[in-house]
Image 1 (cartoon, rainbow, N blue to C red):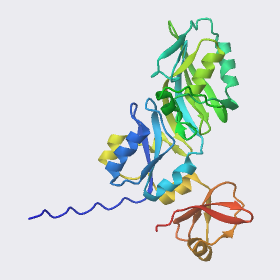
Image 2 (cartoon, rainbow, N blue to C red; image 1 turned 30 degrees about the vertical axis):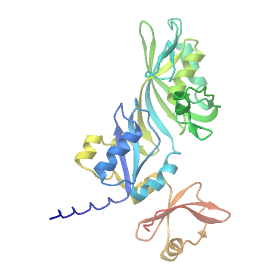
Image 3 (tube, rainbow, N blue to C red; image 1 turned 45 degrees about the vertical axis):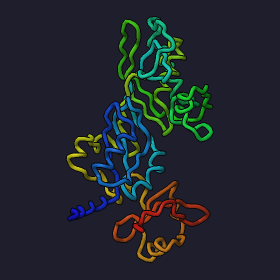
Image 4 (cartoon, rainbow, N blue to C red; image 1 turned 135 degrees about the vertical axis):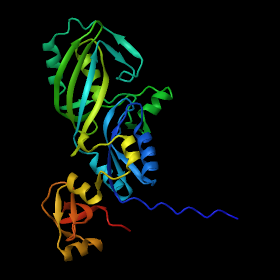
Amino acid sequence: MSQPKKPRRPAPPPGLVIVDKPAGMTSHDVVARARRFMGTRKVGHAGTLDPMATGVLVLGIERATKLLGHLALDRKTYLATLSLGSSTTTDDAEGEVLTTADPAKVTDEAIAAGIAELTGDIMQVPSAVSAVKIDGKRAYARVRAGEDVVIPPRPVTVYRFDLLATRREEDRIELDAIVECSSGTYVRALARDLGAALGVGGHLLALRRTTVGPFTLAKARTLDQLEEKPELSLDLDSAVAAAFPRRDLDAATAKAVQYGQRIPSAGIEGTYGLFGPDGRVLALASDAEGVAKSVVVLLPA
């Protein structure tokens, strides 16, 4: 006799899970673990963290995956440790050493001046082994294939680059810093460029992301905690309310949105959430030419 089929596990509700990523795992590794814990294939992440990095990784579950491309545009904050005295192939501690120099003559004043030059609106060249796409292919994949990779500089904003501590070791200077920056900024490129400007080379020793937009370590859980209790950090309504300006609609206007009709603009800059009279989110929208256009529809099919 055939064995009766096990009842299918119901899909989890849509929302966000804030993970405190451990070192040594890729963001894709974390997504794979979360799919198993949450019982769904519909899991994605907002903003890749390198394997060596730890900290806040935002996961979207079910319909909340539609939010991820918009969440990735927010500010991010990192605790970083930079090393001056050597450069590496990956601009971090996992790469092979390219150059070494004695940093003993690098003064605190020179370090402060170098950090100031890398604060504000700057043009940054991402690391050659980054996930930046060149002609449709990731830069790191081209490097692994033996290609010479040249990535053009691009504008990023470093809102804050504060030095917390300086340690002068025998062959290097270690700097602990807080970096608050725009999405697309590479902290290891800041370490590389600071070392280059000081003439001694530099790379990133350690990195911990503490915030992504409004999401912080205070909301984050380890993978072990998630496995033990596979629950959302924020349901879909709470996630949109936390990450975007809110626009509440009356019943008639909410119905128009549900039928795909355009509604009058709100005068809100950027993307915002549309909420019905029951407090449930309907869509993300933005104003254009006097009307509000849905950017992402979040209603269930």
